[in-house]
Image 1 (spheres, rainbow, N blue to C red):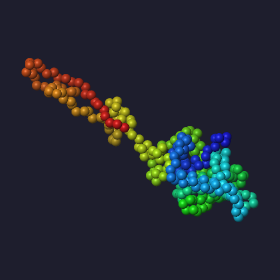
Image 2 (image 1 turned 90 degrees about the vertical axis):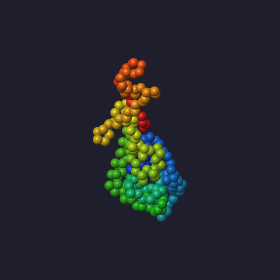
Image 3 (image 1 turned 30 degrees about the vertical axis):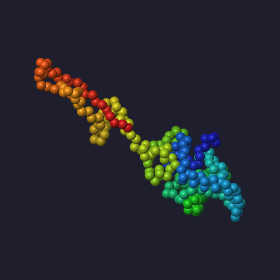
Image 4 (image 1 turned 45 degrees about the horizontal axis):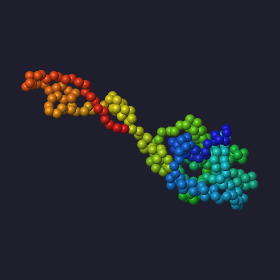
Length: 265
């Protein structure tokens, strides 16, 4: 696979958090920043600025470029610790918040480990996540289940980008209100789109689409309009009553009723 075709490692985390968010960022190439993403960016910048160091036999490398042609991914590791004389890699991913119920952070870390395995030609059994709110490091075992989830997620992201598919929105208050892409995604509005078909049917003067119970929505006919000074109603019969005072007779008029559709999207 050509290096230009490699997808960002962060796309896996985006996809597990929300497939639509992933598509907006990596298919449609849109982006918005909010307080949470700004705090995360500043945390990564502070980590990247630390440079290299050696302490207690552990060499720490920051902002290490990564790639895996097997997964079709590339990115940058926040921190890679090289342990022991054999320089065994140990990835550490920094996150601004706290440990989460979903496994998006763990998958991103596992993808980094797979990249390192491919680059160093060695197996990596464990990595760590450092959370800014708790200021604690959480060890993550890179077991078979996590590796399988990581590979399936990478395949799903590649297929999404290949087909240019953006999934429809699904509104989940807790997720959506914290997402920086909320205004671009518009999940509350697009989850329940306006009844365009019904509006078009009304404009064309026909029945609307079937509603509950198989009934169709019709625009109610306007009330008869009276002419000033008496006489018949428009769209109805002329007033009966025989000869008028001038000797003339009234004529019964039967005309088609004009329906005036109204309503808006």
